[in-house]
Amino acid sequence: MLIIPFLLLGLYFVPARVTESTEGGFQALKAAEHMMDPVRVAKWMEPFASADPSDLRFTPQSVSYGPDTLVILRETAVDIKYKRSTGSKSRYFLISVEPGADKRHSSNFKLSYITSLLNKWRGGDPLEKEMRKNLQNLGRYMGDPVSIYGFDIKRITVTDTTFLFTSKVIDPKMFAIESKGIFDLLINEAKKRNVSYNGVRIFHTEESGKDQRVIYAGIGISRSVETSADDAVRCKKMPFGHNLLSVDYEGPYYNLGKIYQAMDDYRADNGMTSMAIPFHKYLTDGYGFTDSQTVKLRVCYPVY
Image (cartoon, rainbow, N blue to C red):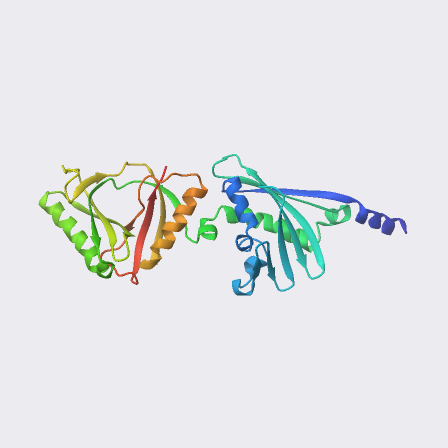
């Protein structure tokens, strides 16, 4: 009868390696950045991801929440070692990342750690079970633009191709009035040229010095018209079927800068090249909005 307890005791001291893997939609080296930064790790690793962010405590290499602490110990560019502690108990885990089948847009994540043969047979201790769940969380996080960038960034293609387009330098204090005026100008120009305006309105704005802002506007038209490079209003075409990053957004106009930055981060992370300036397309009637007004837009970023 004493054999079984002694056998179990012996299994407790026999080391065993456990490995598990999952896949996520991100380049390997870029994915590793999200595995080494404590602020980013806290977005996918429990118990930190479920905590109120104000209750988390960060250092350059760690995050803590009550009795729970994670210390990030980088081994190589693609092998990240974690020391996970809760109270007096600590365990070490290694997560490695390598390119997935689609090397440009996916990665494989492999978790490995040393445990006892008895623990492996029982399915692991609480920290081991938690880390295996966190591996799956990591894979889901890497495939979710909202978690990483804060916005639901999608990949679409150009459908509206022909525009009357113009730009103007304005006083920022006159933004709402000037942005309405520039669209009125374009709509009147379409009437003069006897072309149909199809309701599509695109817009972009950027700062130009302390007291100046440049606004760019375009309206969709039914066919091309002859214009020259010197004309104040020009006909421009977008290549049908070319790639766009897009975010459908409803909220205050002043958040556009955050969306553009998130899209540029997504572009860089996924090895894309900017093809033209980003722009937004109004999804509801109207134009000439103030910075604080709620708007419904599709923000687009041409890439290849």
